[in-house]
Length: 214
Image (tube, rainbow, N blue to C red; front, top):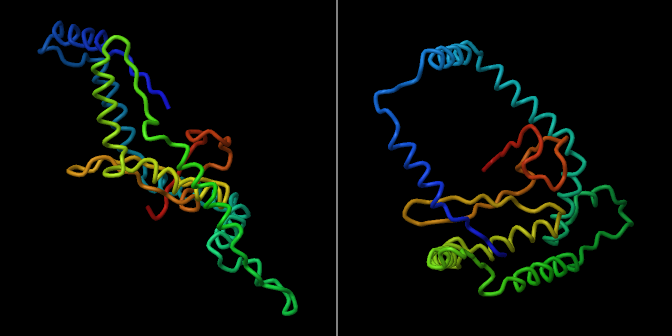
């Protein structure tokens, strides 16, 4: 997984030149002040209930649109955990209600394959202009993503287990914890209410993305 970090020297020089030539006594002009005041007044006059109602409508729309899929995902998750699927409630008394561990074993085999795909040095960073910077970031990311900190490989594998079991991966949210460093929080797919019109394989698509119970 190569990561190429561009040399930020020119950008920093341009920003330094901009700061050096900036007049410290110069504030926003009259037109900018009027625009800011107009926008602030418009926000102040908005009814907060309007935003709350809009969010609740989006939530209800997403829950309704994904209801059938969530039901299937619940069945798949129960089967993976070797629990009786919800659909078994509709079986007649004479019908078998057997749960076999094959789905669990298949998912675990797939997750193990994913974990093994990550070599000890799976991360590479290149910087042709300054190899020392590349080496620094490589060492730092190896430490932060390692098992003593964020455990990227382990958390990625856990997210993949959900994908293999129900068809949708858990969302990985990177968080920086002061005093501890980088960590990844995992969110189950049924705790995420997404715009049903969003395109698949486009994580940033759609008009909204609502987390619940996280």
